[in-house]
Length: 132
Image (cartoon, rainbow, N blue to C red):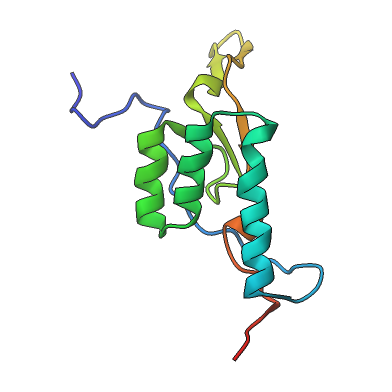
């Protein structure tokens, strides 16, 4: 019998980290970055997935890594990439069964959704123009 907060082996979530440094195609201001982010979050739910998962991902993207971890764990978000660029909701968890000696791989995608977040909603570019 496990602890109240325990998970089955193999289902532990990946520790969230910020994306690697990246550069925008041209230098942008904070205002431009904010506008890009708002446009993404306003349109993202229209491409599929559940609104509550998009809301959780936005909250996680705007939080520090410790709080972001709590948010995605509580919302049932499955993190494929620790930088949050690719996630799934629990309904979309790929059930992977590898039979040790027979080496059969079975994938059951289920009814869940894939959520792809661009780096610009997760961190700032290295060539951002800082206004005085």
